[in-house]
Image (tube, rainbow, N blue to C red; front, side, top):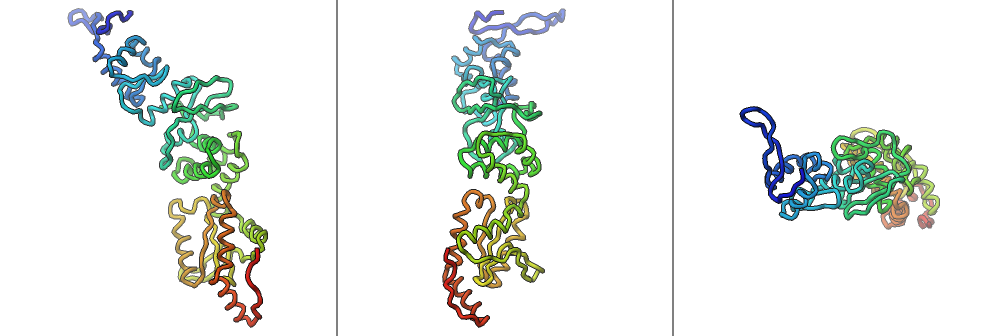
Length: 351
């Protein structure tokens, strides 16, 4: 039935006597309440398609907007209120406005749907396969894919990519290497994905940017504390003309043997290389106890985070160089040489 009267439309009720369906009138406010109850499943936004299934025409929806009860949020989406949209509602809008048959929430937005905390991103990322045209909508970033990974889309609730796939794509779409590495680490740290799932996703998800970098970061995360080989650090020392350190040195402490990643024994300097999972769970406790014992024994400790190393190794090596040239390090070197009765005519590292 065409809605020709502003205040009326047909609904159905049962006649008390015969039990036969007879038309009854539904006012705009009753219609609003009925749609409001239904829209709870979509965080109080609703699409034209769902409205049609509820028996609400475009004209009736437009009247709700004119009455100040609803808000139009694009060509396909209405909010059944006049306030700001919540995150999940903005995700539904992103899918509907892009095309619900072709679009899925992806990247960091999919990670946020999976529970990612501590990342601020206002826009909603959705992906479509490249053969589909995309329509620009404010607050929605559409990314085209060469192809989808088999079974990558979760269809229950908001259509979205699985967390491991979303994590890799979020790294490809990030504004910087630093942001890419952070998102990958956070996804594992917050237990949205396992390191093994991340490795598998990296092998099949082919992005257009920073491929080698993402492969290295994923390898670092999967390898944990062993991701930065001490040989890499020793090579960086040689480039700068620094002394050759002792790798995997062993000390005896009150709680047993203490294994140090890198030791410049003559200078009293220890360099601890923290893997990507250094602060996850209780991993950092043993590291903190070890570092504290080193300081108690009289040495000083510098820490290198492996993800930070991948982003800016020079900054860390600048600190190592400065430490080896410092007054306290050269004093330690002089005392060590004196104890060995070797003339002290060295001036420390030159690189």
